[in-house]
Length: 377
Image 1 (cartoon, rainbow, N blue to C red):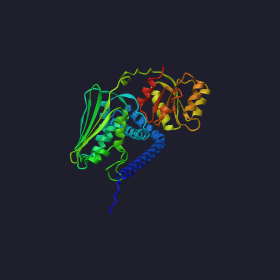
Image 2: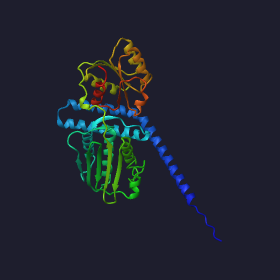
Image 3: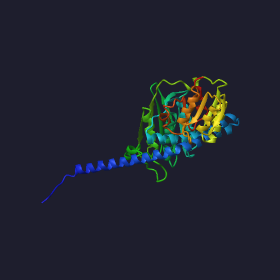
Image 4: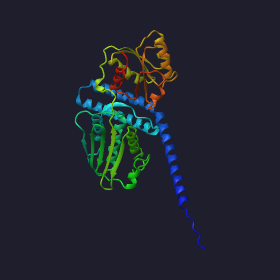
């Protein structure tokens, strides 16, 4: 007697169950990453803000070419640290991309300037970008981090050396970035899983498996797409494109700031951040008063101070940023308020406070000048 049982459907159900369980586990990992990143974002961005703003000021004040180059490298490194944190937050929380206009050619050159210093002498970098400027609308830091991640992945795929080619193509509809290497290449199975979160072929402790996932998330958030062409022993080529859009003013068209802008109050519990913000605002024509808390800022206005601008941290001990703004507006309704924050989700959380602008930490002198230039005179 022979008994036959078809277990095809049962095995398919079991495989689907395992796939769903794995998806749940991955989702839990992402939630944990998001909570961890959010927990350290504020303090870490305060530290980066001081590094970036001091390096920005130093770059403007030194004349020795070598010292200027050092300041530029500090700025690039701190910007990369900021972008890494924001990319992780954006990936884990699926936050929307920031919308700004920037020169894609300059962005690529800056990214490759940093990548060049991270390449061994056995890897040759070849860069090809169009002449002139190419204005793109989107999140500059996300797209720059995309290029850095792809370039470093290519470097790791060439342990014995090789050639890294990075090129940018542009037409009236899109900008295309192509990163190609002459490295080990990928098998079909690896290529199909390349964009999965936490999937990596690197040795334990050498990779998080988030690099290509961040690339995919960033590009898709811009309405574009990314594809991989690779075969074992024949290298890898990654092509990412994002559409061009219209509607934002050219950064170079911003009206120059007048010499005198009035009185500004900087509210931040971090002393170093207060000092660098005060330094920047003084350069922009403001007489600056400092407050280490919301209560101290309110006291300044109650004592008779009439500022035209308040730059206030969103997270403060005691009276928080939103409540501080509410009380300051009650005392001086005409003041312009700019909030600072190290949290990626800050624009949603401050939408009801009536602020005129937002500065994401860490910020540069150029960031401060651009926000202030858009305030009412």
